[in-house]
Image 1 (cartoon, rainbow, N blue to C red):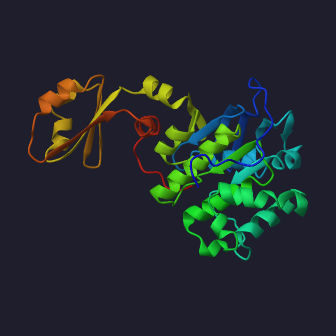
Image 2 (cartoon, rainbow, N blue to C red):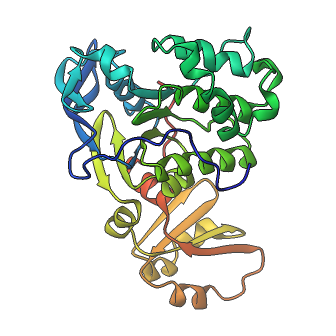
Image 3 (cartoon, one colour):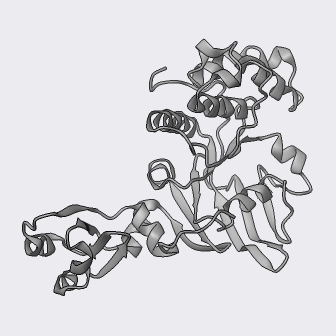
Length: 323
């Protein structure tokens, strides 16, 4: 499959000014813990909205509320021409495509059969879906695996089959919960290519991810969550410019941590230490690089600020356990 892979049956044009999906003031508590706290966001037609945050930030609970799998304690969800959750949950889900974090393919059916059987959940007749199956398999770069069962596929192939399955009902909005977790770089890039094709076709995507390069590549806007609250929202490059200095110099190796406490720190707006690496954030790295000179055993890496820097500044560098 090449870069010009096409998805079958492009969606009908949508009014660009009206949101396809709107969540307003969502709250969800489990016991004494508030998991989602007064969260509001919208998704426009043809937009990829990325939701990022540490473990326990509320990303998966938010997705579950959007899918009608978890009922919010308060707030509202409106989608797809005035429908609302939970009142119209069945009608909304009929027009969504979902790729969950964990593999839910049926191991007893072939790739083609997985698509056929899944289409029946939407009330589609065999005559409707049969012509689409070869097109969907081609889109997923799985035409040669039509008769293979999921257990015979690589991780990347299974994720692409899950994506093809999510497209059987020609959804306007796709909800993807960490769709490339566990994939090798080549498989991730092929998945990204397929998602970009869908966006070019006018589909909308709500994407949760732990990969900052994925968020920066695919998402037109980002929602940053921490402890269930929205702490930032905007276009990736705008958020980076708003919250960060433009230049970053990483130091590691001999004496790196000592240099973080030395007069060299005056060349930077701020200095952070993580493990054995010192990060110097600066408006202009030239003075710092000149002052560092050629120090034996010291490794330096000068780069522009990126989304990972933003994530770590807003949510901290401490490890969060799953939950």
